[in-house]
Amino acid sequence: MYNPPANYMLVTAVFNSTVTMSGTVTMLNNSGSDIANLKLTLSDEDNWQIGGNDIMDNSGNDISDSTVTKKNVFTGPLNNGQSVTYGPATPFSNAMIFYDSITTGEGALSYFSGNGNVGITYINYPGYSISGGSATVTPNLTVSNNISLTYYYCYVGVLADDILSFTAVKDGNVVDLAWLAANETPGRTYTVQLSLGNGADFGDLVTIPALGTGTQAAYSNTYNIKPTDKGQLYFRLKMVDAGGGVSYSPMRIVDLNTGNTTAGFSIYPNPPTNFIEVSLPENADSWQIDIVNAQGNLVQRNLFYNTALVQVNFERRLAAGTYFVRASNPLNGESHTGSFVIGQ
Image 1 (cartoon, one colour):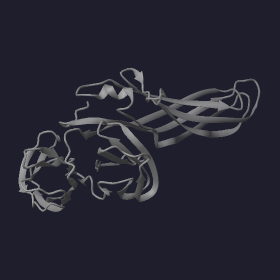
Image 2 (tube, helix red, strand yellow):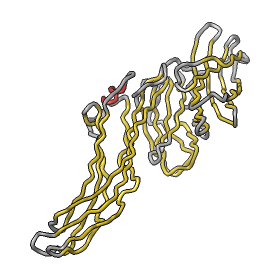
Image 3 (cartoon, one colour):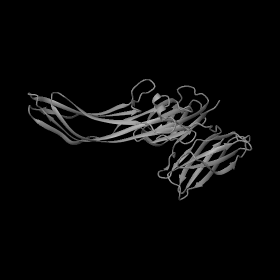
Image 4 (tube, helix red, strand yellow):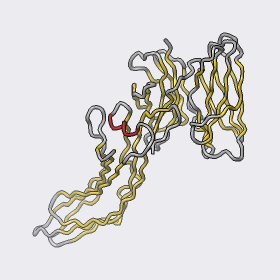
């Protein structure tokens, strides 16, 4: 079920699966001759389909299948008439078998547009192969799978270019809100809005008049977490100019179960020129950094290893507009999102 918040559009769907395989494999040599060195290899294959069709990227490549293999789990001689059993053993333990994504630039993602249900088919194929001779193989394997489908979506309403940064950080029983605004003008107001649990139905918390300095101005506010607040809190800023023009900041999400989802993640400078620096919350083995434009198209993708601070150089000059940054750790599924603005 894909059900984005109001004024948000789908950007990417990420498919992920891990597998654990355990059991035994019995091999019987009834070939009529001795085998000097029989080798057994085990494998496990995943297949994902959308609406009964394999997933294809926009280049026509089939990305729906992925296989993990463990070669030569058994090697040794097997005399004629002899039977030997490999295991009990666990050749795969929570092994990542499939991690891939499709973006709005790829046709299959159109199945996820709008609200409603779509048929997702997941098929798992455990397998084996032998080499070095002919034998009858009797597998007795148990496979357990952990699969997930994660949606990433971005705001497609009017974003406030003059809000340079906006943060929401949980500190005990309060959420500290802070933002930095540029091009201050008299008559402008900032309204902190909150949505409880769905990111769609926002209510006003407090309205703060602009300082009207003509340059940059910093603001802060706090939200007292209520005993009835559960799950995720969605915060955003509504900016209204003196002439009545309305724009919004990107959303900031605070998960009351795990704390602040964006702690330690930041993008600088904003607005940038030819690069951005992305501060990550931990020094992970690998990070995938995606830059996506406001239409949901992937602009560029970079991989970084063993670092918590990366510099992402733009591969080409970016047109004016709002861009979204998604940092994801393919090993544990952790992800963080933010945005930046390219001026005229």
